[in-house]
Image (cartoon, rainbow, N blue to C red):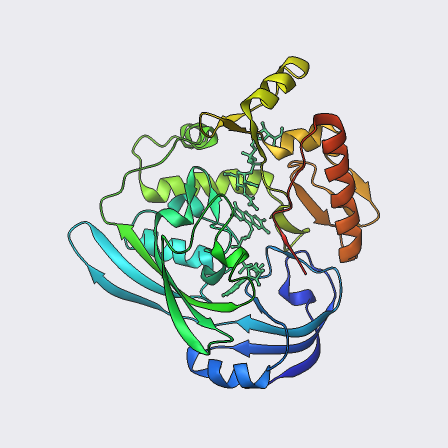
Length: 336
Ligand code: FAD
Ligand code: EPU
């Protein structure tokens, strides 16, 4: 175990922000955790996976615990399902490909989401009509203060849209070490998200399979989301806001083309990308930071942006959306 000092986090975040961490320690096995806990006593500990949902705005004063715990274990199976415990440092997309190769369904719509398996429960990752919570059976985590492991059931994780207990009561209190998934041996395909049907049609797919769905999702994502290896970004910077139906009806009178998705009898979801585009930000550039030209919900780093510049731009976007539409956007990325 090596507790390093003053380590640049540039290679460890997909925004490509160059900021140092005062202390940095890589964890490759759960057996290391008691010693890591002692070595970082009194420090603010933050776990880092793929760094694909963080914006670093200032030097990190405490300890960054870099998660590199690998391994996948099949716990049990029956005629219909298989239960897998996947260690937190596995790459999410590799896990999705592994499941597909074995014919196990449930995560194919979540192909190509960057980051680690351990971070998937944090914001209950979602895309193309599916959220991680639909396949997560339980989450196991090391509690820094109690110095022991806990297993949280799906119910206890209190998953919501881009939300869970790990962003609230348990924020920076635990290190998620593994996630147990229940996958289906007999798939029920989810192609409800409009773009998937169109893409499958374009690809000439006549017989649905989990591989075909993943291929369609990968094609859509590649066509509109910037590859962090080429342009720094952390995916959607803001959440899609949910507003009361009365407020939506008022907006619709002024903006008849406003897109929306029903949530429940009282509320409706509006795509933040549309709101931001309407405010004129799409493709905007200020120095080395900006708004992606194909997806207004994605803020980018063209090379040498610093975190506070991205933060400032996000604040200006937030203000303009509030001024024009009366909707206050919420940031999705974790700001350090
Ligand atoms: P990190 O960025 O390293 O960490 C994120 C947060 O979780 C931090 O607060 C960190 O402290 C905490 N954390 C991470 N791992 C652990 C752990 N083991 N224990 C405790 N806390 C931990 N997200 C979606 O939901 N849907 C998408 O479609 C999507 N598309 C994306 C596309 C692109 C191009 C990019 C760059 C990002 C996208 N994201 C998407 C966001 C991101 O991929 C997810 O949030 C992902 O789960 C982050 O994983 P990570 O390992 O990189 O987490
Ligand atoms: N739109 C615009 N202009 C834009 C972008 C979007 O008008 O520049 C409008 C369009 O009406 C479009 C709609 O927004 O039809 C939805 O756009 P898209 O399908 O690209 O999805 P999104 O709502 O922008 C969400 C997630 C993504 C996820 C996709 C696919 C959030 C915050 N974002 O984006 O997740 O991949 O749906 O399911 O919910 C992430 O969380 O990092 C992320 C990328």
